[in-house]
Every structure is written in C-alpha cells, then in structure tokens.
Image 1 (cartoon, rainbow, N blue to C red):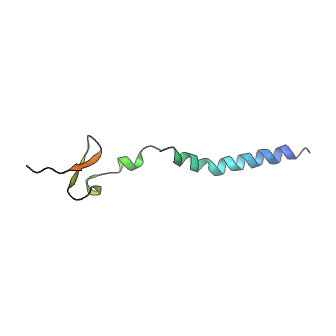
Image 2: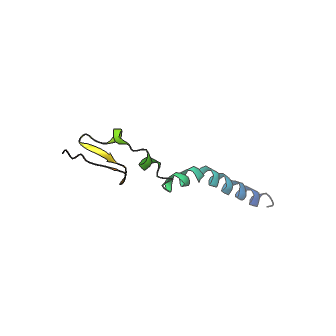
Image 3: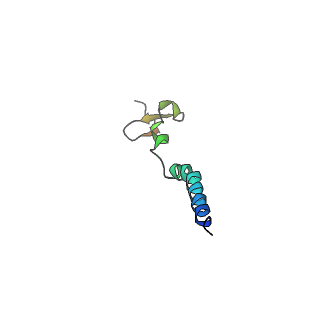
Length: 61
C-alpha cells in the first residue's frame, strides 16, 4: 500500500505536464495573430488601418 500514493502523484504530474501546452494555447496567448496582420494580408480593395488594427475598404479621392 505504500507505493500507491507515489503512483497517483506520478500519474497526476505526468497528466499536468502533458496538458500544459494545451492550456497555454487555449488562453488566447498574446494576440500574436492580430499583430501579424499587415497590408499584404488585406483582401483586394482594402487597406490596413494601423489605428484600428484591421483591414478597411480603400477609399479613392
């Protein structure tokens, strides 16, 4: 019976370490996707607006 708590601890630690990357990625991270957007990733007819951080329709004057 003495070895049983050790097996439970080891199993819990292994599960925690195995799932840690999943939990880190599920939290939204540091908005990497949003900061990687640039003018080259906007659809045709739109331009990147740095102020709003999105692509907006291109206006011609």
